[in-house]
Length: 249
Length: 274
Image (cartoon, rainbow over all chains, first blue to last red; front, side, top):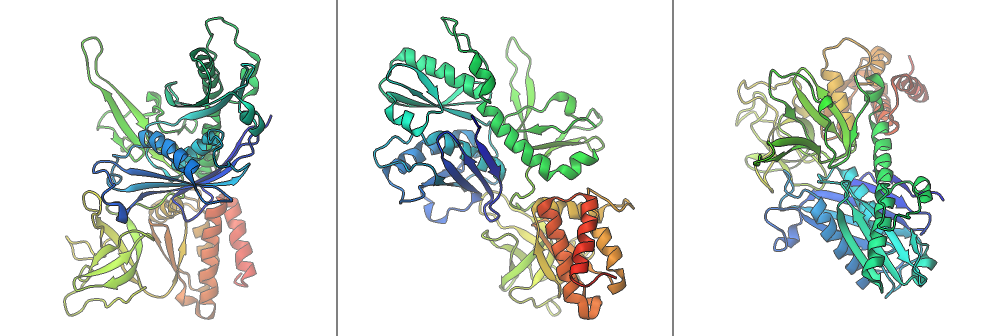
């Protein structure tokens, strides 16, 4: 299995940009962020002490609809908590994030948007890092599906996701706190608990021994941790930018 | 020097990376913040330094500073005392309204804040003309105006020299990280060819000396102004060549050896090789 790929800062006119490609789902998302910028027409909607975060999700082949509005809302509430909107120069200004879906199966009207959510979250995190927007922490996300027979699949393909009985998107902070939990479908508390453990280990690589003690140990090695992926992408880029400084040291 | 340390937002700066100079207080540069836990009954107050941006940690033991270098293509945000190249947008009774970065509010430059300017002898700048200016103040809070000046208000001289209208020449865009490097390289007192990994300027200087040399002004807002008016017929060619050398060095982050090769190649392509 090949891991996701990403590149940073390739749009020259945006303050920050990133693209993210996930091979298992086939999604390819291009993101840009402009911050801090003046939002002149929205003076009533601006918060006096904080930056206003706006997220726009643009599907590649149609205009944005209800599904995009829904996912924009999830992204906005999540990112608003992570961005330090009270830093100098940010209050009463806007952080505008635009995410364009370039590849992958289009999400049809009425379909679940959760399959796309991790890719959108990763892309927006990378664009914010690329623009140097102050943030209190990074995060890592995982998408899991529970099949009708009760198996948990991480990073399900679109076909798996369609037939799954429930879909879960979870995001964790580097300290292991749960930042986002979006679930869809029928499931019970025990299922959710094992989903959370599985998501935690795929995000952070730590093995949590469940109450029954039989956690599949084989999978930790082959799955690269989602958290490391962000770090490696950023480190690669910074190494290239500051090669002159690092080499001379 | 220890291995380069790259932090992501939320990461703590390890205490062994901080400068160990205790004579004056530690200063934090951009991208870092201090988080304190107030002392309670059981634990004493603890302080940690965490990053708010992704970047490379750099420390200066002499001045006891620690800062985070973020991506080099970040947008320029005006800071007091930065040297910038601004373009006049329009003028009003007291001020020239200048553009420092695209799509942001105009910066103000007083009609009389030039060296030796008085009500009768002030520069009449037109739309689109360029000035090399220093950021005087950035105001307080959102929507505040950035004010520029071409003169030191205390002495009445242009300080550092060279501030004022830029006549002739051409402006090239580079990344803000590159602009900062070029400024350091040109202001550094070291007499070496390679400063901050930049050999391109000294190499160009050597190669173009026979043509009469060139003038360069670097703005922190990612602009470089180049003028070769001494070069006579090949002035335009030389200007373009210098701009191309700087932009390619920036885009491809070339190392000093490659920079020298690039200069030779571009000058040969433009038939400027001496």
